[in-house]
Image (cartoon, rainbow, N blue to C red; front, side, top):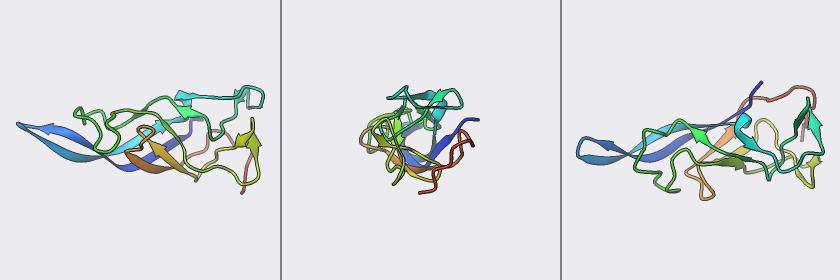
Length: 126
């Protein structure tokens, strides 16, 4: 299973003939591209993700080659915006399905949601 974080609109400047037009795209960050910040807590033989885990790249806005309107990036990194209230992993709140995300850079071009589970063994309800 691979979790996805999706955000819309990710507005990027896109060449359209002789002009550059701000165009909205759907931005998707896959948890399989994540760089975990802790390795002591494993779920289904893989490092569990927390708020400091960064998804190395996102996709879907690659046609906006004149870069994002806010972030100045295309296919930038993504990370969680909020985490669990009662479950910490590696000293930081655990990330979970349904939580808000920041995508396409540290100054995010788009805000989204984690919309699919990456595993179903451990459920953090709060």
